[in-house]
Image 1 (cartoon, rainbow, N blue to C red):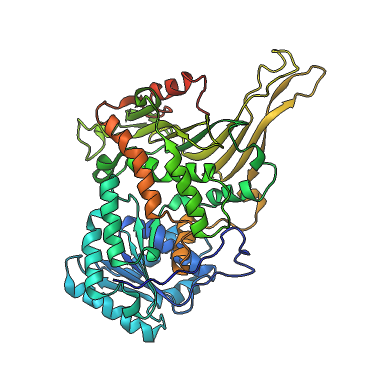
Image 2: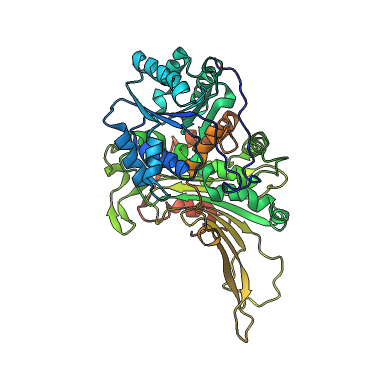
Length: 510
């Protein structure tokens, strides 16, 4: 078992930006299991190149790919970096990076391959000066985690003391399929690595707008006083996708929208929205406040009326005719897996008493968008006639996570003219217009944090367990009822609209 070596904790809000004080890790290696897979090619390798291009990787940085098929990994990595990089392509940057690119071919059952990986890391201590420092990224299906972790335990690659430096592991979601499987996975990982060296990645927490939610609330004086049930009517958190399941039927049909998105992304966004101000912006303090929220979540008393799941049928989406879920390749004709989930949750704290949190996620919806909408109560008295205010809605503060990152404040204003007509107007803040520097891609930020040992943006095992305690009862209820149907290109099943209508509310149209 590894010895405990605390990681470096860095404040993501108060640190100067990269240009003034670059956050560069000490010399190290990043080992990617599943190095030729989709996640590695689309996200990880481009993120590594972008970090190098920004000067945020240490000299002699090493990338080691581990996969069954070798091919020419340097060429594969270069193509992936060129296709996915967000920064300008510079051949000299890639050439320096490529000097540290290595590959070990083998299967997860192959003892000799893991022995070779361990020997490669040892050799790199002298050739590249990594001083025993390495992070291991499990970009592989969760079912294969036990094989890889046991091999790492056998070769002592996870042991900080044996390595002479730090050893960390990155685990992709989903973190189990329910509470018992999640606890079993956490026990397995913690038996091989120490808890401080385990990084459970939720890429939504690496998005700039999500992090800006903390700055919005706690760096300003005019939002926090009204951030409570006295002024807030409800909160809507939406993650909508206009795509279907693509080639992911093998994964998605066993998982569904609730486990894939609701359990992690949306509950984390809820926790950040509802949390109290932490005593400081270090990982432990933020984790403490998020955990309080997750443990205070109350499920609806009647899930039949306040929890809806759906499944898309054929229809029109993004301007083209698309198949229904049952017609997607690899999906069973009688599958009851949900592609849409919506639920009302309550946070039973003094701040949020009586404020419903509506969460929804779905595939084949009209557009791709993720947002947090805080809807405020109506003014207690309006000294205008009904005709003057018939186009006036609720005040809203909308944090747009993707794709148009920014914030919109919606409020009432008089229409120019001789009459007192009041209607909604909006003030927009867009990242792309307000800052000359592009926001880093989520994986770029999170990979850098792993190498720095900063766990602020990574859910802890207790957060994962608290989230499953919310989702498991919903899954048990939903397993007894068929999913409601909705046409591709619509905003989900009619039952989801009815869920809000019974409380006198409507979904916000992003």
